[in-house]
Image 1 (cartoon, rainbow, N blue to C red):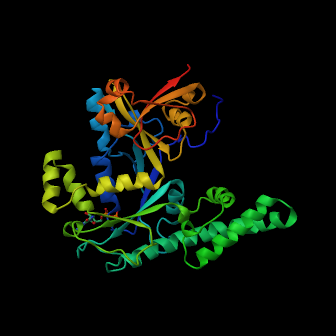
Image 2: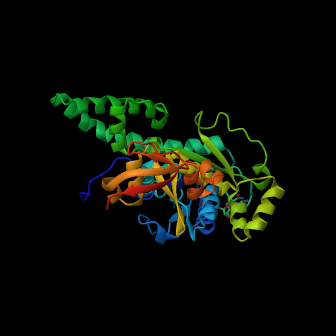
Image 3: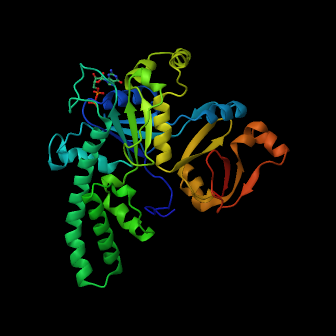
Length: 373
Ligand code: GDP
């Protein structure tokens, strides 16, 4: 492979999720629970960042232990994503208040955002607005993101206007119309991720690194008793926004319990999956990622690829040389792998599929790649 060449859909950095929210909503509590309770071992992941506010977290996947037990694997290596604790945002951050621009540049670097919103009541823990109001809190945060993006757009607009006027450059014209569309949306309080744009515009938009275009999930930090209750988030955020109820305090307590004790405790509370696991899984999904698996005696391992990646490039997730050397892939879906008791049983029954380089790898596919070395 030529050095420095960039292959489409190959992920060559650990994807990261920034945790943001107003002060005292439980961000750090949540971040600490994540990195203590779900910490991934750095040595398995070549692209990880080592910084105090960055934690690498395993993506829970129940399929792995079942596959590993069939293959008699010595090790299980789940896939991982990074969470970044981004220190408190206050109203006025886009104009430099609080940590101001530093805060905003940290958000610019992450691939998606988890916005923690406080629903728990505790008179000893001060809320910046003096009352619990999720809609209000989200508006304060979103306003700061909108103002920061308006600033980015306005700076870029004056330059693009000049280029578009002086040349017949088609790209400058596309950029100009996109910037004007975004500016109008932001001025009306809309997030740019809610605006439909053309595929050509999408390329330009990616280059702008706008904060309001990043995928976002809301982690609603509630009291334990609200976890098993139905809570409506209608009228808060955008129509298809994802809200995950979580109790950062409970998650912190669960870390010190054994798996069995934690399960029993959750059952008592009427909760199945923990909020942390739900949050990690949703964060992984919102990045448009899927998992394929390799499995044998040495290890069962999950690999991350973007949705719609071909077999040839999926092989590149294991080693970039596999892209050039790709010959074919043996593929089984998860259900068959379990039903026919692994590779041997699958082969006996003729259930292994042979796929070529154009095959689109599906979530949960178990793959064995044949490559020329
Ligand atoms: P941050 O400023 O958003 O990072 O908030 P912290 O995680 O530092 O939490 C602020 C305070 O709220 C701390 O004293 C936490 O122990 C407390 N806290 C966090 N989550 C919860 C929760 O779910 N319930 C209650 N009652 N307190 C919480």
